[in-house]
Image 1 (spheres, rainbow, N blue to C red):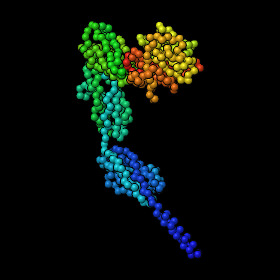
Image 2 (image 1 turned 90 degrees about the vertical axis):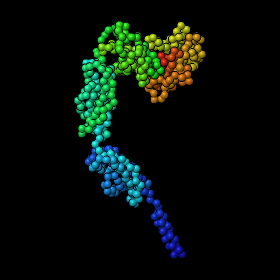
Image 3 (image 1 turned 180 degrees about the vertical axis):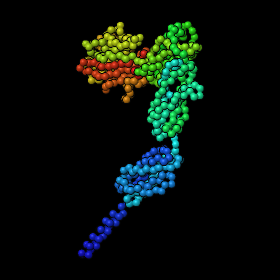
Image 4 (image 1 turned 120 degrees about the vertical axis):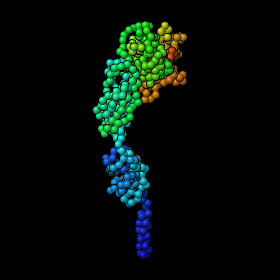
Length: 478
């Protein structure tokens, strides 16, 4: 019996040992490689290698640098910890780096994907096209800006070519960081059209190619003669996001061409957007920006005469901080409307048919009283049947206004949604604050209502509005 028990114990131990010995060891994953993609010869480069081992074992790395350097195994590193190794390439060329990992039980991973590195001397990248005034006057200093990046992030010098004869260049500027703006000032002395370009050079004397050109038209100084100015400037929508500028020719003499200038909202200078126009109109795509326009007549002698008028697409801003809910007649007039001529806004009595045509929207909870809890902006033609619209006549003068909420993430400077009847409805809920609601009036004007808050106790809404003065134009940057 005792022999039988001893034999059973031995068998159990053997089974346990065999079972433990049969547990399969998994090799590490192929390493991930991080490091520079380009460098000069003889520069020490640091690369990071990371591999995880499914069993949590420490891992060693063997790196093939692609240049014939013998590979060797590194010391062990914790699984998942980044291991760094440096290497220097003696000669220019393209090399492919790969690595493998092994665990403490000598199980090796497959080779990693190869990472390419290019060794050599690299010039700066071509600078961006210079930025600055494209319609200029002789004798006036103008600022031009460009920048260039470097493949190795080296600092660079910039030089401008001003578009004249060979050698019409600026001096090389001081070194600036890779991809940092560099500006210089230039004065054109002769009328004409110039192609301004830029190039870059690093501290090793390696130069980039010349950039794309900025075409600059230079005329003689402006003179003031009212009879030789473009006049009667009118802005209209060429589409819902482009602007047509039309004007009348000077009365005293005929110009050879016109320059159209645009000053974007919240900026201080005009920039040319068209400088060879001979017609009496021009279509400008402002890339959803608003601003002010001016037209300059340029005569055969190079004299320039700008229009005195500077019409704008910047929307009119109106602060009528408090607008009462329709039922809150004790608080004041409930009909909100914009003056098309002056673009101001006023509140109107909605029980008075004499001012019905002046109302563009009102605020309501679509109930008697003003307890809410939900308020809406609503089109005027809904008011006679609104439960809160006591005493409001069924006048034929009530207009229709459509509303749509801006997408989440939109700002009050964004272009408004395109008009479509299914999109712009006769009311819009005000359920979060601030709430941005686009509107489209019966006579095709776009605008924006910003509702900052609702006071259910007072029965009022706190709002701001922007009204685009150009019919059918949905640009609202302000």
